Image: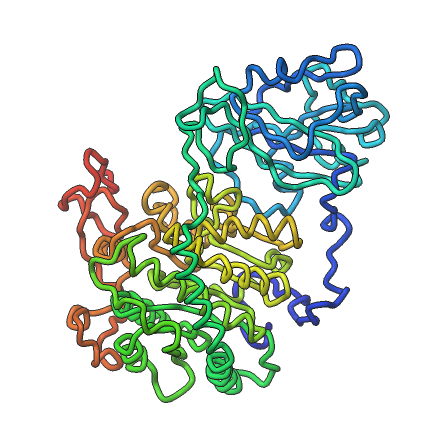
Length: 581
């Protein structure tokens, strides 16, 4: 796509971006990146904050299973219990390897957490042949540290990776059970709980859902039948009109791409956005900001949910092909609420927009295009699209902005679903189809972020989906800051303001209300929509509603701002001012 997207974007464009058919065998990666996930010679477990290893068992010191698990507040295992009469050789040796080095060595795609440095990963060897060198590290002693990850894994033909975390205040045990045939890659979780209530160490271990916390609360119950039937109705409407909608979207995209390039339309990247009337000011602001910086928005297809927002976008469209495309799916979107200034995270309007986001990217995927999806609360500093065709990222199927949340329901990827890129292939196609089928869970959780994060983990394990989170600790992740930095990492914000980091964009997520979002954007130099165009009537948007420079207004002294706002009130009680005088 160097001809399509151009050079000079701070990276070397990959020669691999000339697309191959989805089923081509040439898509195989080098040997080291084709490590299969088969349970055999080595099992790798990450212990966040690892300090010691549980006692190893062998023929000399078998202990009763109940005694072994007596002190465990929680336990995890992966298959049926092994026979006591003939203990298997499941652990020949153990060693520690530096976690940071391991994360750099392999493209796991998972971001690092804010934890103290120096943590190690625990490496378990299941046979003497898997051990590095000529001798296995003694499993009965404290595992030694092997600083060189390549040396530690030199004899491992297969590698199993488990991301593990111990929810306070439980004591955690891990059970690795040999099983003939194909192993499982799911974790079966057990907690000491009564039928109802919190952790109770006097109770027996019992099987629980993976997101059950020590209080005994399952944060991921199944949807009720009423919600499932509601989702079925949505699916019926979608399937009934799918061909008509695809014909409409195909014509819009093909007509636009024909004007942009002579290269085949197939796989050409399309940027998807969604908007209702209540969010239209944010969309207009994004487009005004892009216009002020002469950034290309011609590949953007805006999926609107009402005639009012459609008219607003139409007012922004000029006669040439430099403006965004627009489409109103009246079959599926007409029932979506208009929204307004009081729209907040998780309310009925917000949840309804999740269905719009699911369908909009699915339509583009079904037509065979790469997709970059983004929310309307984003302002570009530079065109981010070319970066996804650089050597560093071209190997991945799905690339997400780092959300920053440490909640278990978003782990391990912590992917933000308000900005991501999907490369057109069979794996991403089925990821979106699976998301469509899980719409009832999306309705239950009021957001598709939790569902997508869980599907990323499942599809990565089951189908080999290659996922990458733009880790905010890495150089490339720092190019995509957002609400996490605005709320919790003011040092990162200061590096942006002093020019040390030059981001591609800024995404004002982690802000539940529309009013606060606009206020934060205004004082952070992200607002380009003039005051006379802020009301319901935005018909003049095309001619005189966009400012060439950001319109800065102070609101809160404790939130980041491009000017000193210390004369403004606090947003959070007892917070410190952002500007230090």
